[in-house]
Length: 242
Ligand code: FPP
Image 1 (cartoon, rainbow, N blue to C red):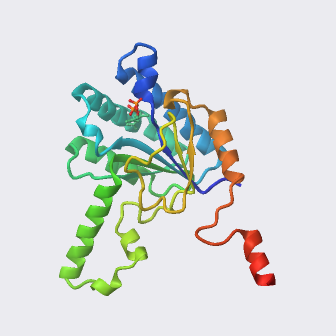
Image 2 (image 1 turned 180 degrees about the vertical axis):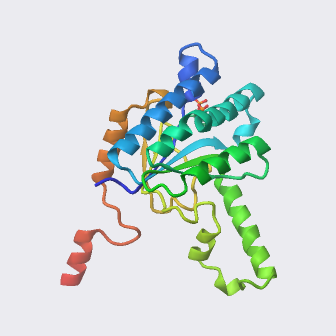
């Protein structure tokens, strides 16, 4: 059985390019190819949820040509791949802050979600202009507005309520988070949602990440025992026996 939700931090495009004496944008273009390969593999194996960290709210501080390249790749992905994704029964979701995005990008993201909203196959979540702290701040602001308007009271605030105000309100928490390039941190990705996720840090750069790397990572996920704050199964059986 597959994990229900795999989320990926696609890291190392820049280093991949540097190692080949290429500009960083060449790394992102190569990363785009890997993205397509992994999405199609996810469709083929019947994965239910796949989240990809495509652009973080901190990425705006990169050189202008790199930011432009990432915005163009997003547009290209939607223009060129949306029909195919739709034909493959993929439902597209986008998480992240849309308020400071250009109108044409907002329209494209909306179009992708609308076109595919009734699909029942892979749920593909694109994290674009996404940062967890910003997502939590936006959620808290919406909660404050609902308290002021009397829709809810302070006593209604629980972890379930807060989760329902996040961009991921209708998305299950990730079972497995994969990060390529050997870096071992979350970089403001799904901080709330990762409370019980398993992590896999894969040494290769994202453009080199293959279907067999993906399969190996998923296989290692099964070797782990997820306890969600509970005891190991063998320990709880021993406790009951005592
Ligand atoms: C991190 O590598 C990767 C990104 C910031 C962007 C990921 C984007 C893609 C894979 C392609 C674009 C896809 C869409 C849909 C926009 P890095 O640049 O931080 O690499 P480095 O750490 O080696 O410098």
